[in-house]
Image 1 (cartoon, rainbow, N blue to C red):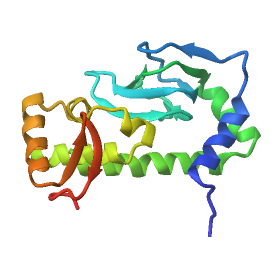
Image 2: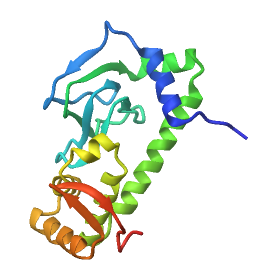
Image 3: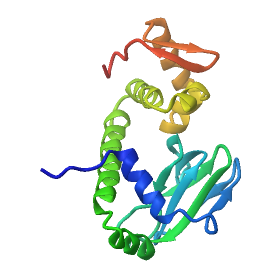
Amino acid sequence: MLQLPAPQTALAHILAIFDNDIDKRLLMRRNHLTFQADTVCLLYSGDYSLLRRRDELLVTRALAPCIVGLILPGTIGQFITIRANGDCHYQLVSNEDFFNKIADQQAYHDVYTLLLEHITWQYQREELLLGHSSQVCVQGAIHLLDQSEPLIRDNTNVADFVVKSTKLSRSMVMKSMALLRQQKAIEVVKGKLGRINFLPDIH
């Protein structure tokens, strides 16, 4: 049976292949980065958000390291914009250089792992947020926030996160969250997610 590396191991290995201080750039806090479809972005450090380019819907907020922009060659354009929530260090690599170096280093299994991780995450996000009532979408977004790194979760306003992740109106989000708090399903402290006790329509 094929043994794939752990996602963090695979990510560290790929970033090490390309790590070059000369080519690294700084994306300062609150700035946005867009790049072409034939380019891969390697994020080495920083707090960042991925936004859907068309309308800035929040796809995810996380801490680097990360690789962004792995899409099928020939795709017309990238779908994602990167926003720096704190200073981020990154490197842009052409698709051709990226896959040539992966081939040179025989790092295919690392790429397989990252792609499978991303596909799994995307399936989960769609399961939680697409095709449901507003109440269920709010719960799905809260669940995604709860799965974030502790530093992200503890410093993110829950209502803001849900609004940006779903494009629901703030009044709808606040009403749904108030009901969840009344049911003691979630605990919110100073706007931050303290704890999930249960989510009635998810688990």
